[in-house]
Amino acid sequence: MNEHQKIRTEYPFLSYITYGNNEYIGIIQNIDDTIATIYDYGLLTTAEQKSKFLELGEQWWFESNRLVPINIFLRTEWQPFKEVLKIFNAKDVQIKFGPHVNLKELAAKRTKKKSITLIKKMY
Image (cartoon, rainbow, N blue to C red; front, side, top):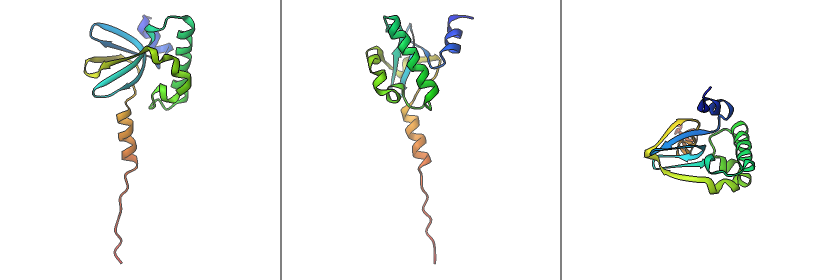
């Protein structure tokens, strides 16, 4: 089993993206038509940070509907990781594997669900 297969199996909440000639593994906060943001696991320096990152990622993965970004779902617990957030131009990002959140799609889905049709009754 290669490293990427191991990551996909053991940590299904992690995404692997490329931007330019660089590779990143982390948790995608949001990706839309213009901007992609990812919490870069590679920027974590201590074993304690890495362990907490994976623990909270797993919590988000198994306890949320996965449509809400991790930083919103785990607001205060996730605060220490705001320093490893990377922002990219979305058109140059390639998602190789892993989940991604798109708040724009979530808003569109909610709008569709709440549409109301009024029918005028004739007496």
